[in-house]
Length: 148
Image (cartoon, rainbow, N blue to C red):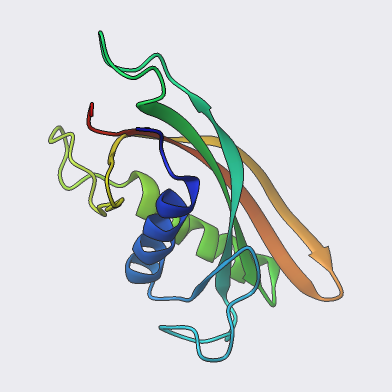
């Protein structure tokens, strides 16, 4: 079974909203009705950037594992605000429950799959357009599906 990029993105969006207590749009800015904070700045925008298939489990489906690339843009009214929100996003993705436990503090619950690895791929830092600051980060998730 192949990995659904949409399901991964929806799971990441839910995790970010819970972990940062700020809204996260999927491919666009959040709406005024978005939970938990609507389109009030700061917020995040999540973009799917594609995926590559892994080698999969032995004797199994060669598309059962995937490396999913996601971009998160933290939006603020100042460079500091965008950077602070980016810190929260990084923490949401990478923080561990306790030192040495190996368990992530914030679970990413993907329907029909399991996130087995996370890494920060790249940070492009802050840019500004029309007094809106954006801090861009890219993350890679390694996702596995059950062999079916």
